[in-house]
Length: 562
Image (cartoon, rainbow, N blue to C red; front, side):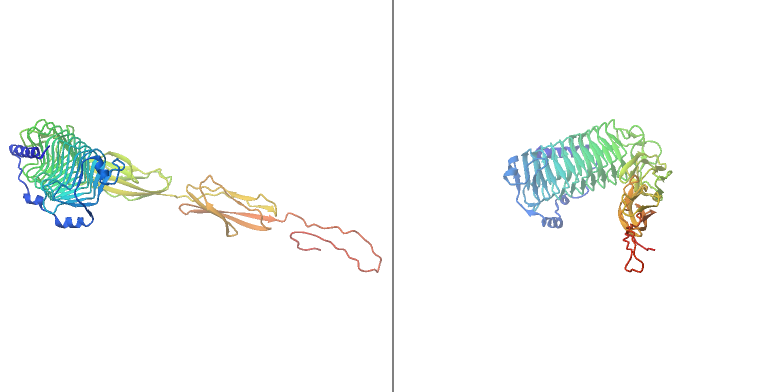
């Protein structure tokens, strides 16, 4: 759609707004949309590389101009880290099908430019990430494109749109910020797009515009201090969840928009009203939203067949609802919230049960919390960051059994949530201790003959959490190691000892430090008799001399003779 058609479309928006009786008085003057932030620009410029304007008109231009990458999903072409300050289109990419990413670039102009900052036209798989754009006409413009992505970009002080998208399907805008532009975000003739975690603040007119589009999703977006927060014009089959409109002239405005679902959104402190369903906005469903403290009325419905509750039990939260009966929606539709809810400004509360400690194997251990809330919804219990229970919550106490755990420390976390998503959290530490000392058998004392072999001591200790052992002989360590399990025996050889009595002591310890010992006495004896030779008998004549007997006894341990 060219600029002349766009101008007519905006004019049509305004004409319908006047005819619907909706106030469109802006909250600030138009000069605020074009006023540069010199301090921010100068601080950012120092960290970028100066570069001239970039014009890419084909896939081949990425390669011919020397941009890194090869255009695939795994290795897109990259334009990065540039400061392009020009009264011109700073980056223009058209008629491409390859993957590319423009990231970490500063796009600006010495004075207010009538050109757009970044232009993507007829591209597929294009991404702009972490870029800052100011002093241009449109900050980022995407037209006639598919599967494009904008992430973490900032557009400020542009004279028309911060972010503009036209005739571009399956695109995603995430974590972008538009501030002090004329319009914040605009998507027109663009289907199946996703806007998540974007912020529009202090834009002269609309924060978010969704026009002539189908099947798109807006989640966790915030519009603050714009003229209208969210303007949905001929926006069909859309989903808005957990978006916030605060301090705008109007919060959410639906014109000629059908079959949309609005849940968990908040419109508060908007001067001209919270949510408006204009004539021709039919078959929309709104429930579990929060509307309060808005000027004029919190809601108005001039459409047909719109539902203001889930037809079962939940409507919306109204600050001006006193808790009695139904809630009448102002407007010609005569709509009713059949299940209105009192505005819930009180977050759930939860107590803090004492930490738990028990001996491994014991039973009957549990944690009981007693949380409270006027509008409870559900609870989740985590054990060491893993969900173990997730159930609906009716406001009663919550108990979880903690038996059957092995030795160790466990973090149990309870998260309770109310109907509007407010939460309370508590943590309880569960310590499972090893309350038993190791057990050990007691092999019999024994003796063996010196120099005989094949002698050893074998113990069979047991424990749930064995760790280590040391064997001492007469107080000096002779063997140590890791004790792995109760099925493991521990053996020490006692061969090669001299004659004597030896005390072998085994000390086993578990992971807590509990220990048990056993002693075995080993006696080594002399098992061989002395060896004696047998000198021959002899005789000699009386009175002759020099006669004697000589024996040659032998023994390893001689002591005495007689």
